Length: 415
Image 1: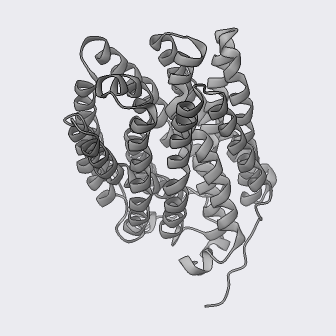
Image 2: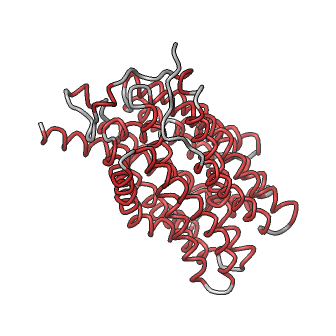
Image 3: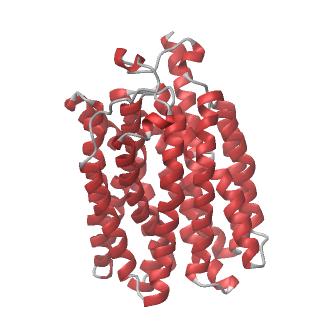
């Protein structure tokens, strides 16, 4: 039984790793591709960034559907859909010549493809690992994100040195297709399907499942949504604009700025699993999982606030930029998985796909789009990234405030 659990659990983590790798590959490469795309196509930073914003809106709408899929059939169908649409998103965008074609190809195909990946990966891991076992295992799965940050960012940079952004996107389409087809083969249904129990399962988790209307009548889910939403606003503004900030505001070369950006991924390769272990130890010490997850959700955006402040020190010494990158990694290692872990601690596993899928629709439908758009818009109207970074810093701080007020339990209303 233990060997079966270990084998299947490893496959769950591996499939989630591949999904996260492709999802964050889209985000990691956009910041590197933004400048050459803008120069080649003759559009403003805001116009190119709008394509990413709309992609994230479609992503959010699709995420709710992926939550329904995983509750009924597991993550395998979601990963298969992601493979097809994710690959087409890169390939079709590489062929565009007009602005409407760019918005359509990148937003629709990439949005559907990536929207199938986040809820499926987080919820599949949560359904197999609960309590003080979740964050550590999610840390291993989330390791796909910094690896994508390093491997794909550097890969795109090398391609851009010899050919153009179109060739880079075509190469990325093949990577996404292959990785997600492998994830589809490795994906597993809930542990009960294999006559197993989740690692860390407690007797109290056997209570009747929450439905969507019950969950969304509680402050717990709305507090988690608001905390996640504002952190996403700051996060996506930074991810999509930070390379341009270092190049245009600080005066670094594109190569140096990309290397600093890659440092977020390099440090993440170490910090993702370590922060997962740290978060689970906090949970174990607090005894109540929701309290431990809440404390981590306060810490994460505060690291983002300090990281934003340190961005401006890059012009004095690259060490300031490097420390900033590492702090962004700490935020990144905690927040996305941590807020899903908090929701799982409050509402259990049975309907977590639908509940977290709808929460993701709300958060991802608005937060990344707003952050990405505001980063480019504030630069376009002011000619400086000062106001963009201050905007991100304020969003991180508001996220910490909402996390502070998260409850430790929720009372299920009667039907």
